[in-house]
Length: 350
Ligand code: UD1
Image (cartoon, rainbow, N blue to C red; front, side, top):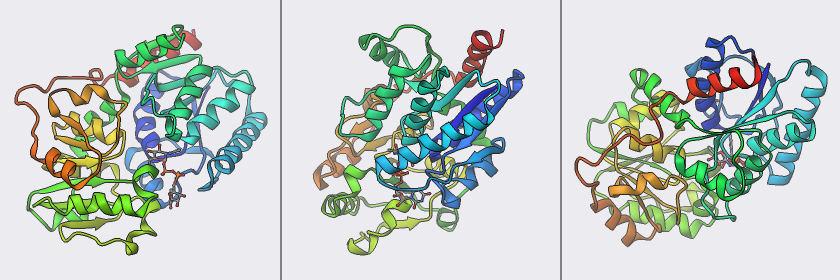
């Protein structure tokens, strides 16, 4: 059996693709949800919409400081394994959240092989909690599945070469299979005008109110409406901000709503990791409000632009368009889940 640990929104999307591929190969999987994301619109809606198999255990850890949150997850995952372990062949984690780190560390201590999907990513910015999570997870993983050559090279530079597989990006699988189900969010349905899609949630952009205000003021200089599905972490501070008139605040979108919102937008402005790729696959220009990106391939030909968040830089980036006819397939062919499941089967079940 494969024990999968998920906890945050992007991991539910990745799990949807891989769980199906594992099932298709007859591989038994059990899912632990750490409860890192717990609001209905951050969690339940994804399980329902994407048909993710039932959760064996929800640790309901919820929010907290990094230490407390991760520590509680470690204890919960360990307890679950000790109570239920019979034939766990490996523990599988996705990406770079605190849930990823907790799953990986628990497995390492219990001598259970670790499968890391989305391995080898680096921003080289160690002030980001995600960078710490990914570096540690990669260094204790047994099977490492990368989204691109770049990931493989990063691992090689850190001395990790065994059981490293370049399979493409699993989020592409999800985009391809679920795009036919895209549906308009309520807020967008009633408005047929051109719009941009905004998501801002990273601590580095939102913990300092002045910084967030500067970003929003820059967004206010854009002519079209900008729809912002607000992450729950940012709700509390909204009333301290002067919101520009073109900004439309929305509840978090489900995955099908997100696909619609990207597909029908003019441009995407974000600090998310996954959204940079989703914008690329759906051929939408992206502006990333961060000093660096792990997804450097998206920067070619202006499909994605890094922006420092100042008013000028938002306005300047917004005026730039990608170079015509330069879109090409990056991060694989959208079959990462089949490739990963196949490798797991050969390596662990034969
Ligand atoms: C986490 C990941 C980040 C990922 C993001 C995806 C880490 C370190 N960060 O960030 O890499 O891009 O998920 O969304 O793991 N909250 C709620 N309801 C929820 C979830 C969160 O209200 O269902 C609020 C709480 O105030 C909480 C805050 O959001 O304190 C932050 O949540 P947390 O899970 O710690 O990190 P994210 O910012 O969501």
